[in-house]
Image 1 (cartoon, rainbow, N blue to C red):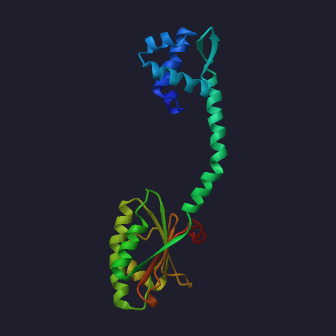
Image 2: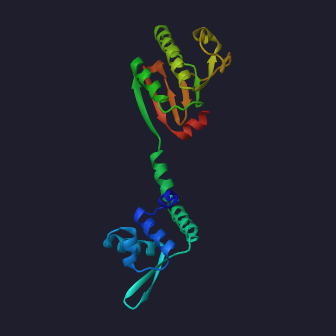
Amino acid sequence: MQTRILEEIGLTKAEITVYLTLLEEGPLNARPIIRDTGLYNSIVHATLNSLIDKGFVTFVKVGRRRIYSASDPKYLLTFIEKKKHEVEKILPSLHAMRAVAEQQSAEVFSGFRGLKVMLYQFIEDAKRGDEYLFFAFHTKDNDIYDEVHEFLKEYEADRCKAGIVVKGVVPERARAKYKGRNLKNILFTKKPVLTNLAVFRDKVIFTPWEDGQNSFLIHSRQLAEEYR
């Protein structure tokens, strides 16, 4: 008989053994249960008490002895329903704990090396099919601009290997920097657009390099949803 499901609903192996023995053999006192299960005396008595507490076993007293009986197997459904209600009672507390864990946090990365570390940290939990949304990187420093875009070509290749779906909005004046790259989901526009921003899952990055080479990685589901 498959007993895995009984373990999954919370019964120990000893409880399963004793319960099934009572189901098969009918009402018994402790002695034949010890004999037929091969369990120690102390374990059988502790297990019987546990099964009584859980509702799987009942007993009647005959003289000084207890005669134990297994509850109807349909009680399994009642037991599962009781567990469900117990879980429902603690769900608000669990949700509150999760909300605390998901509070916003931010990290600052300095310089070009920091930018590279941040961008790979940005996609470290990527799954195939995840969307990476961006507004193009821009800075007035031409040397830095060229260096960053050379790196972004390598970064794009790694995103593709991970199966990430990339979508972006890029100013028309920057089209030349995207030559040789996957332009399938890139929108080039002459209209004024945001720059230096990307969204991935519940994270947002800003790279406002005009005021110093600092990049910001923000963990915020709410902020990520607002920029999508």
